Length: 278
Image 1 (cartoon, rainbow, N blue to C red):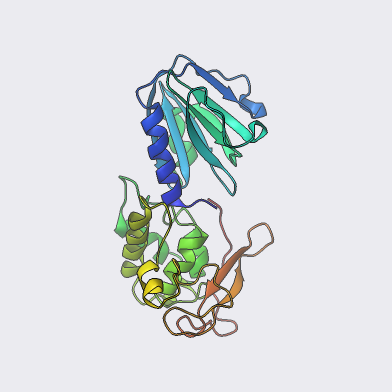
Image 2 (tube, rainbow, N blue to C red):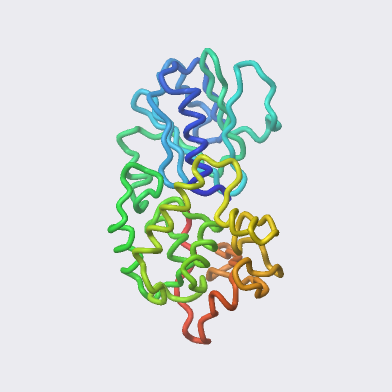
């Protein structure tokens, strides 16, 4: 699933192609908005809000969320698309460019004045102008019994963290993802690390949280634990393991950890809660 850095990059590409330009054609391929036409409107800006994309055009906002498979691509007008047309959910054209949203998990058109009703629940945006470290720390601390992995994935706490960064941050603070938030020795450091890793990756083509450490050990890994089940920990050599995070199949996330660097909580001492969405 795309994370905050990926969505931020998508917003930059879309903004470069659309901002200040008049839409000459729009095509929304979802039933509720199939008849909507924003042609003739000028795009003011494209911004990311956590994992959400907001394309603002003369008082209306095209709101999308990539979910698992979504992607926005920009082409010179008239160029052939790199993905099949049946996957397109939104097509925005101006005199020079075509922006296509493929397999978007969410697509809607709302008045710009109503954006707060749609994304106002989100916590401080790790890559946004509203970033507030103290508020992010306060929100995490408000539920000390909640599983750390669940708390980090809850966009109401910090907006922009997905499963990759969740796993990596748990490793960096030495806490098992199923342990409660109260097990984190320093929430302020966790919040600072969250900001640091997303800022570091927002302009990178290949996401990295352990690139230099992995290279130094001759293994070339870009991450500490995510997706490395059965491989040696880059720090101590213990075999990385995986577990399940969430309360139901619909909310389930696979989480990765080092049993030595992140000791699992004792039976009955796990954190509570389930994944709360994006």
